[in-house]
Image 1 (cartoon, one colour):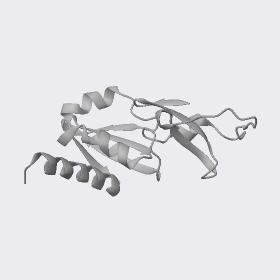
Image 2 (image 1 turned 180 degrees about the vertical axis):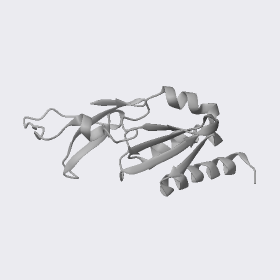
Image 3 (image 1 turned 180 degrees about the horizontal axis):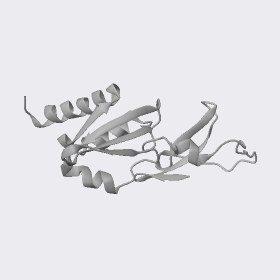
Image 4 (image 1 turned 120 degrees about the vertical axis):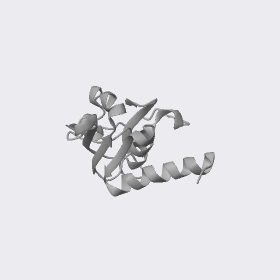
Length: 144
């Protein structure tokens, strides 16, 4: 089990997909106790399995670089956001956060919370995802 964000997840072998998967606990509609047992593979390490995931969403591993304006840089500096993070100070008080992470959608939603105070420098697909979230907000609330 793993608690990520605001939800509890179960990590286990999926018979349908024949691989280790993540299941959100509140979406499990029914459970049964079976007489068969399952042994965790000896090379499976839960911490390693979840170490490069942002939140709980998987996807390709991305090299992420985000510039945070000085107005939010203190918060970025004071928080451990991801185990792989590295910070680079910039003149004027801004900070660049670098990390290796998975989960484009979750990362984009997190970054959108900083409004115009965060700029994705790479990868392009994360930058595009944040742009699309912003365009959706403009459509919802009006504007050019």
